[in-house]
Length: 299
Image (cartoon, rainbow, N blue to C red; front, side, top):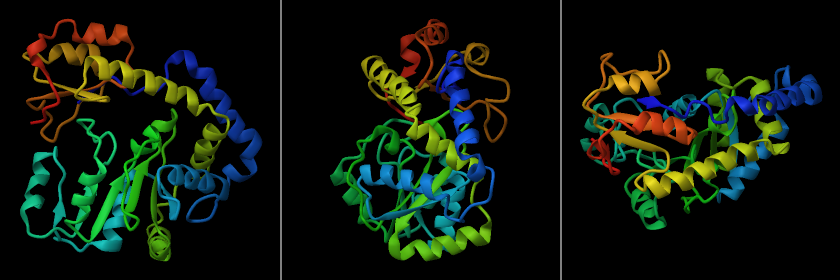
């Protein structure tokens, strides 16, 4: 992957980021720099609950985690045994496809809004069909919370997500479950010691309450509209099969940001375009023949 979206806001907005961090320390330092409840600090959890309710999940109970990966670890610990079958959504990494042909799946994992990497938005009918395939449905709302237009989801679904895209420097995940599952997840979270720093929770809270996050949303909405106009297959990513990848390394990649399992490029290069400026996109794409850009395909 060559990523142009590592900075959600540009350097000129450094004062905005600074002001939010200062507010965390000055207004909530007596809380943000201390330990808190395992499930999360009260005010940030209430704010996350508000976001979930807006997304159509008013009865789900949220818990903060250190990352999306840790949220998924909790889901696996609560519901799955080693070797049980998972239903893998398409597109998917090739290494995971073996799990899609192992019988009736125990769980279905879906990103219902702006699926990574092709930007697909599931319809309510598609979600109902997916939910019928397994007893457990896991929805990843990392992009769904940003969109604020989440398709209807099953009330019994377990919801996970990363809050990292909401604000620069934020590193925070969450899992939200039906009320009857909350004691189980709370015990697992406490036993695994996966609850995040209180400071990160209040960084999320202050970014929301000061409406600093609105500026990030504005950039994302503007970028989405631009990409829908020129890259209708995907609001967040474009796939390219380039003849020469050195151009992408030189113009699109930061040191250490290019990775694959074997230390080599794959056949396709994914371009993260979310917050790149027109100048950055023009510099990167000007030398790429149009036939090398993929129209929503994934291989």
